[in-house]
Image (cartoon, rainbow, N blue to C red; front, side, top):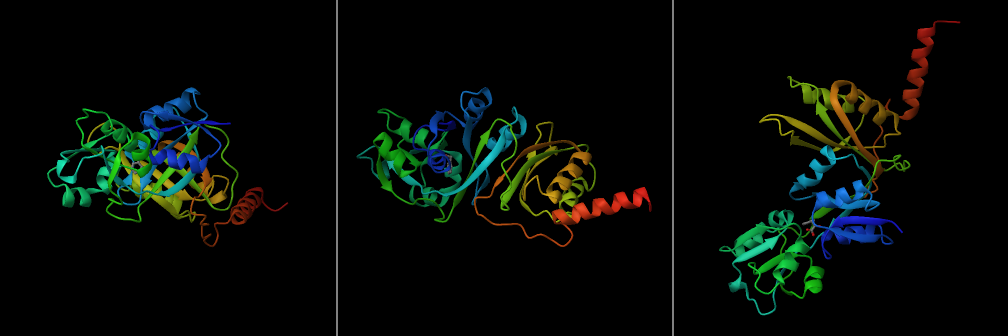
Length: 306
Ligand SMILES: O=C(O)C(=O)Cc1ccccc1
């Protein structure tokens, strides 16, 4: 039975994602995303499940940075999970009593309309996770009056649900990934995604366009691009790419080796089945057979007629 670390404690959305991704796994709650990934890196767990992005506010930047800089880990699976936020309080608390709300930053941004409309005077403070916030609010004498978390977190920690569905949009989806220590990529399924991080060799006009060209000319469609600061000063960035296809596909392999030639460094984060089950559209001349045929043709003209 694999043991998987996750952003805990019990009752986070990440735990819900883990239960779906690996129902049989033993669950190891961690205090934050970095700790969950470190547990996987150190071998205390066989892998980890962490949130990566959501459809309303975009990336969970801690996860992006951890995957880019820490000891390498590979993404082996993804899950898209609709999340529903509840306003949770100690039994007896009324809306008018709420001065301080505690929740995860991703929930702060996704519940902004509700808090501004219903609790305009309240301060919203960032918690390590939604369930950590619920756990804290449940403590007698907690400085916080309410948590925004999953209803199940309220059940776990003995809080009452004062309002349900407090998210600004009801159709928000969060993308979670399962990671493990690097190994061979998962088998291609025909509906795969590849993730990688690229560091520029030097800053010059068109540097980003040159990277994108490697994908464009091979018919590789990107599904996400994110720039993150390198930390070396204003204007210094590296890039996260998610793309359609598997590293075993010729067009993906060629594109990322092209990137490797022009970048200071490329970190391959994995090829894994897409949660939405979509397959890439193969543009004319970019199927595996087209690459093989072109390579054969080239070797024939290099050898000359025999
Ligand atoms: O804090 C949690 O419960 C998480 O799993 C992170 C998160 C927070 C808000 C929306 C989706 C995931």
